[in-house]
Image 1 (cartoon, helix red, strand yellow):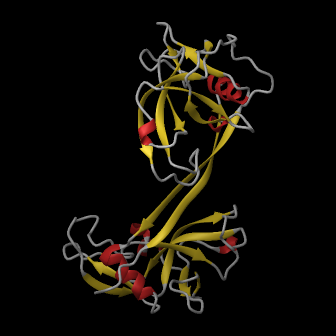
Image 2 (image 1 turned 90 degrees about the horizontal axis):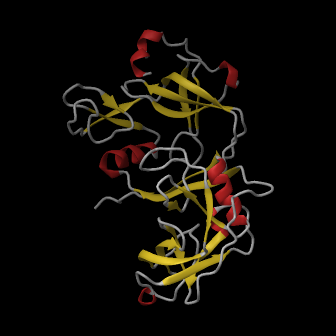
Image 3 (image 1 turned 60 degrees about the vertical axis):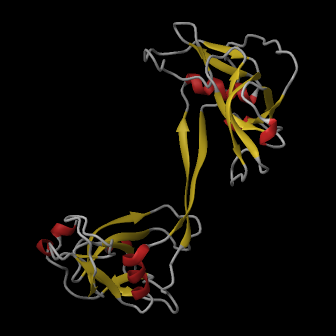
Length: 313
């Protein structure tokens, strides 16, 4: 039985956004241990606050303070917390309708087990020791059986308002390439590039997908392509990526290997970045023990005519 290929992959980037007056006041309030909602024209108080009424689409701006205590309206047990979640021990995800609010806030509830959670239970905010103006200033919720605390009626005006946030976005997953791409990956380990031909339109796809994206029929006929190819388009990268030991600027391009009807992407080296061009003829460069080309370099051939690759742009 052939080996089933799989590999852990991570997609991660920081997402930076500016805040409008409502979100700015809400997050600044959390920094100051104040929970704010926004009042709608029909008298409802929305927490978390939004800038537009979800029913009427009217602008909303009247901020009101609600209590840091509330009632669980629904919940789900998280038996295996993941990286970046509020707690590193099992906890409950809960929707909490804070006292004075008409909508519920999603957060974590620190409790010993699922038997200790129930709809209708009373909880309160546990504030983070260090607060910066983010939803994580609420460390979590915790069970509470006391009275509803009095609020000061804060109007949402603070000094040194939070005006923007940086939220890290990350996706961890395990990728299994399947039959077609496994054959492609295995061929690269022997310094060959193999695609698959559609039995209907006869186009050769590299990397293969197991089916023709145009005709929708399965592909199985393997075709070796390259090794040389043509740069169809490219970009100059000026921002250094984390965990990638390549000095900027460098060029990343789409390369149509000879015999292929789909351009693959790869780094282009061996030439000053400002001399890379559409139509440039390139060949793969392999490193010792590498399972795929490290980069592509010019072959020294004349540039390809535009008409020979225009359909692959």
